[in-house]
Image (cartoon, rainbow, N blue to C red; front, side, top):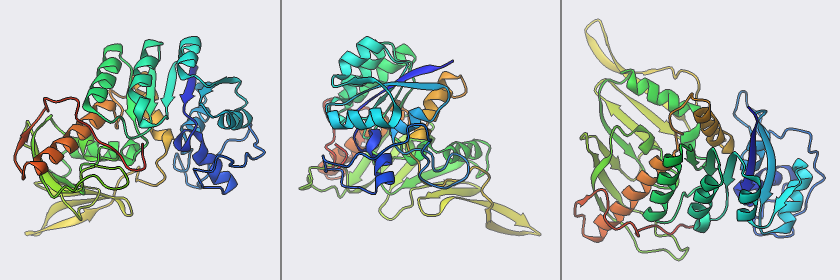
Amino acid sequence: MKYRAAIIGLGWMGMLYDLAERTGVWDVDDIDRPTPDLDIHRKFHHHKHAGNEGLPTSYAEALWDRADIELVAAADRDQKRLDAFEQRYGVKGLYTDAEEMLRELKPDIVSVATNTKHRADLTCLAVECGAKGIFTEKPMAHSLEETDRMVKTCADAGVPLSCGAISTTHPSFARAKALLHSGAIGEIISMEAGGPSAQHQNWSYFLDSSPAWVVGTGDVDRRESGSDEFTGQGMMTTDSGLIIHFRAGAPGLRMTGTKGELVFDYTEAWRWWQDHDVEGTKGRVEMPWPKPQFVPPYGGVYSLNDVMDCLAGDLDEPKNSGRRVATALEVEIALKQSSLQGGARVNLPLADRSLGLNYDWFR
């Protein structure tokens, strides 16, 4: 089946990232960014790696790169970006009004790469207009009310929702989860990460049950940049009793079991240690990581892949699904509430769904 796709927002992750790779112009605030003479018939892989690594970073390029997708339209308020989009992809469906595009074309696959403010509204509108799959830029939304609405709307309609092209979308994370479930490190005892980071969390993909409560400390006031994301440390416990530590200096993710560890670090990728008994001597040794291994970059191609795998029936839920990102947002907000109360225990779910976060450069 050929899916018709449209993108809303032709900014940095929507389209400009891959154009910048080709032109060498990286100033995202430069509205007079030169539009290159683009060969619309040539696929664009700006990194040289085998396999999927090196495939497009931007959502527009990821959509255009798939044989089972026909990129039919884009919406952006900036006419110069629309002109660059048409020149790059040869697509004539150009709109300055996203709602008009969705209601008129009713695309099957929709990428929502706008600023955060209107992402929830556009996601729900895309579902209303018949979208079968949606992938968005990060962060997912500002408030719990927005994430609740996005998750429920998509779930009720059976629409897979992936929220952000982050490292979790890489296939190596699915491999890590399979190892975990196979007993490769025994029974999991705890997890730790450098922070909760609702923008770029890795830990919620591996949760075995819903968060029950958190304690947090060391958060600071909203910064001059505008961000009030959690900056302290803390601990979370799930309904099943699993403990997750958010510790300064921790790797991207460490999962400790009764018989070993799985560790993810952005520079060294995945590593696996397992306990062995050799002639009566017990020791923890490093095991070779089975394919695939994490190789950056981890652009929009993987987020889209998860959505398409869900539509094909090969995946129950995107690895960085809206539900999992919404969980991370609620945990981060709860940690802030705990720190504000001097490290008091805060139970989940939070009653006040108007609570949210302001972000720094991902607005």
